[in-house]
Image (cartoon, rainbow over all chains, first blue to last red; front, top):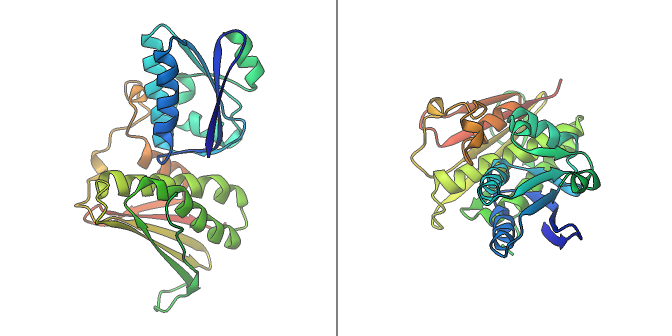
Length: 111
Length: 153
């Protein structure tokens, strides 16, 4: 499980989650994004195209990051969720809290 | 990286009705072991289940939740304590029991995490998610052991 971070020409920081986003690695994702927020970045896209599963600790970090980014005047978007992950967001009603796009390119264009 | 976990399925030695095999695993109270423990158990469950999607996603998420709760809240990440995972493979069911060494909790007191105010909170979704992903959930009287039951339909 790894996180890769890149910055797009339109200043969007894209974090790709390769593997799982669970209790064992959620702090690593949180710290990467908070460091970037501290450095002045305000637009974030988390790409779940290569993600297997997410547990409630991972969802909790996304909720926490969403608030912190919004409080700083920023924007967090999610993309690339497979059918299982979409179901998880729906059953926890978190699909109402996040801007979710099917494809990362679609999310990038929405900033 | 944590040391590797290992466990093997063996024929059930006890006289439990309908139970054909069992697997027992001890997981240290360290969240870095969760992913490996989940993979180990899920691989064995996968071999006995027709519905691969249930195992690929539901079992992995539910077990990750149960282990996280046991390590973080049950054992308080106390390195001197561990978490027991006991899987019973039956003709019609698979039961996954996760037990910590903590004092237990009252699962009846958990708030509904999908209420509008609760959606904004970073915690409180674990047991709700488990209930949504497996066929039946039971707790022991103390509240330090959760049993997740999957049925072969």
